[in-house]
Structures are given as structure tokens and as C-alpha cells.
Amino acid sequence: GQNIDQPTEMTATEGAIVQINCTYQTSGFNGLFWYQQHAGEAPTFLSYNVLDGLEEKGRFSSFLSRSKGYSYLLLKELQMKDSASYLCASQRRGNYQLIWGAGTKLIIKP
Amino acid sequence: NAGVTQTPKFRILKIGQSMTLQCAQDMNHNYMYWYRQDPGMGLKLIYYSVGAGITDKGEVPNGYNVSRSTTEDFPLRLELAAPSQTSVYFCASSYGVQETQYFGPGTRLLVL
Picture 1 (cartoon, helix red, strand yellow):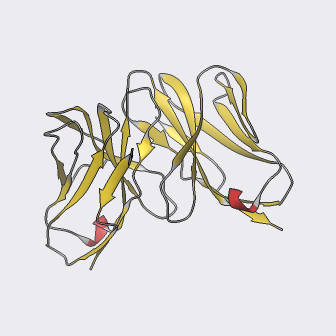
Picture 2 (cartoon, chains in turn brown, cyan; picture 1 turned 45 degrees about the vertical axis):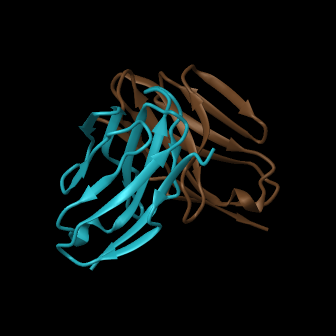
């Protein structure tokens, strides 16, 4: 079947580092997306991983291990504005439908 | 560029009423999608379109219909609204099937 799991909620401190994990079981897996969604707003694109390894974009990095069906989003130097839900979504080759996780709500405390 | 726009932002419907959720994009994207998002759940694909005149069902199409007469517009029609259709509806578009999806601001629908 197709399944994606991520923690429901995480709490971190301003200025710290947090890692949000995502595990997936997707037949014909092609790649994995991370989106950020602030409360009451639309999801916005953060990263897309196709190959194994770490991709860094400023304070945000995303990692993929295809053999383990595992990805994580790493957020450094946390800011209050990073308080949001983080959605991972897996993609199958040649398929229009992304498989979405329920999202991880990240709470940042001062 | 306005990106992806949706109207209305919020609507209350009575059971059995019908309505159309509007979606438009000005990025000349071929692919467009309708999702619903329920609290604590992942996004569920309702319908998608790969180009004008071509639409197909997603994961949860029952109770909805779509049309795609132009590249820009992709309206979602709800017939005979039911409380189970209370949700937030997002429209999205992408240039290609393996490309990043860009989302509209969403329509919050309450069916009472």
C-alpha cells in the first residue's frame, strides 16, 4: 500500500535546531516533497528530494534515504515565524497523485 | 502574477444546496488539482486535470464534479452538499506532473 508517517507535533526553542522525520511506503517511489503550512494558509513549497543525501537551502535542509524509505527536514536557527505545520508528500513515477502525510505541527517557544 | 486564486474564501451551505468553488491560475500551468484538507489529516486529492478539456478522478471524487474549459480555470462543483463535505478546499497547479505544486489560499466550507 501507500503510507506516509510523520509525528503529529513537536516543540523546539527559538535559536535551536529541530529535525522533523517522515517515513514512507510508496510503490514506484520517485521523490519526496516538503511543504510548510502556516495556520489558516496554503501550503508553500520548501524542498524536493529525488536522490539520496542532504540538500541544503539556507536554514532549511532536507535529507532522503530511498533504501530506508525515510526523509527528514532539518531547521536551523529557529525563528518564531517557523511555527507552522510541515507536510511531507511522496511522489510515484509518472503518477499525478502525491501521497500526503498529515503534517507535523511545530511549536517554537522563546 | 497573481499565482493561484480561489473564491470564495469562506462559505456556509445548507444540506442539499449546491455551489461552485472557483480556481484560476495565471502561470500557464497545464496541471491543476483540487484537494480537501480535514483537521489532522493529509491533503486528499479530489480531481485533477492535465490540460484544458481533460479531467480525472482523484482519491475522493464522490459528491464533486469539475470542468476545465480553459488552461486558466478549474472550477469545482458541489452538488447536494452534505456535512461530510465540511472542509478546507485547496486548488493547486503545476507546470508538469513531476513539478512543484503551487497552492491557492483555500476556501473554507461549512455545511450545516
